[in-house]
Length: 117
Image (cartoon, rainbow, N blue to C red):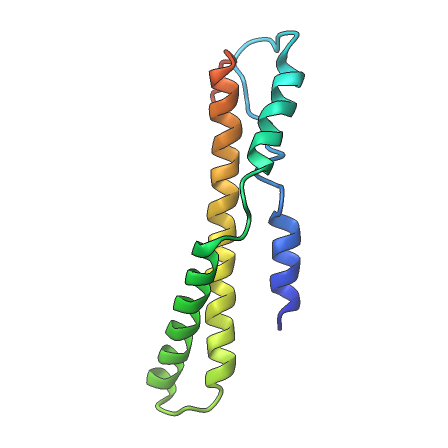
């Protein structure tokens, strides 16, 4: 059950940091050195922090509660809690990936590149 989580974390670990933005116009001589520096800055942002633990806890409680209410029993509450935690952690990883991508875009804009996406 935790294999999908491990695969998701591995797949998402640096994908936002490796983002190459779309620029309007030609890429100047500094583009690739700036891109490398901005991607390194984005990669330095944590992938797991306090919000990850909080999201997992809320997801676990939500999954367990939903299972108990939906099924009107406590059967499989552990599985439901694990699935809820996994869903919350995955959502947190996607959010952090998007933040890393935004760091690359903003950094490149700050270095004078006409980033459009």
